[in-house]
Image: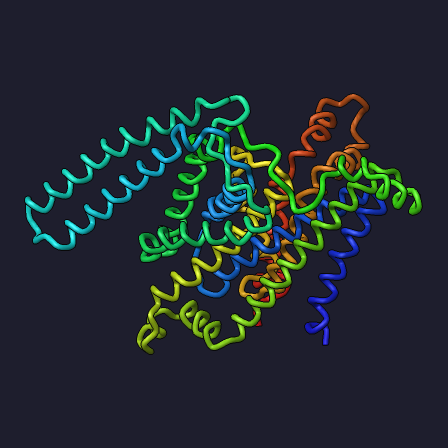
Length: 434
């Protein structure tokens, strides 16, 4: 009976923590935690799909989240005037030539007989293709980045509704996962982790340095949103009158309205993904994936194509992370490639999955909400708690001052302590896999 009530009680506790934040701090903070908790729960579901279902140790989550963010720029931002005519088509031609060179080199390697001739032919194609690619591509990049570099300097997007960027972010991440999976999924778990982390860093490096694509470290501001801007609501007489009837000032009302709207959208996406994940978990496909996770050799002996199934679930989990990345960028209305750090978008997501309970979709969702709540509140409550703990020290003590000033930066310590406590007292997570 207690085991059956465990999950509802834990979710009720997290709900009370968020509601308490609204009463004790502010509803803006509570809704921010709610919205980012929803996004974090979706990311945790993607990682749980890979690790909990199939045992794939992917620590390149950051790269797939970043690709989702890039999708919002490519889909929803308006095209930069004159960029395509100046060098856009030349960039596409250069990329096509680079891809064709790689395909040609692979064809030569597969069709020619082993020997010096095959090696020389492949090297000639690769080297010649590289110089041809750079000759065409670099000129297009220079022309595009020269167009108002302070405000644009990139190709822009398609000017479509930003909601469409969410599934496109999933498709972009899935395409990258297919490429990565075809080359890296044959590696053992620890080597797979190293490979995915390195590839994620490559993705971030491209986004930081290729200004024609994402403006690099200059960031993309003003990404269209699925909901109106707060300023537009504050200038609406009907909205101001409605807020006044509720006893709210227009600024507070507009902020709460927008955040509640995001919460409903994100909750709809989370529910859809959670339902699909639960159906997959309880299907014959889900049982097969868990069998492969538990014993690959036995599953392969029973005729299961282990590599193909690993590739399937790696693509699915990465696509979910890409959708979450697009949602987060839509919430911020800002793409900042420099903000994608492994600590925030890989380590923290893994903590959510481990603490919540790997192999259990409900556990991943719980971990997403709980860990993000603690991640936010440690910075806010740390100085207050440290002041209480150091009250016995003399007034003006350098040690007390240092501890209070450092309390806001104790997130890593807090996450480590939580992880150790859960692994010690509930090794399979707060809501373990059945």
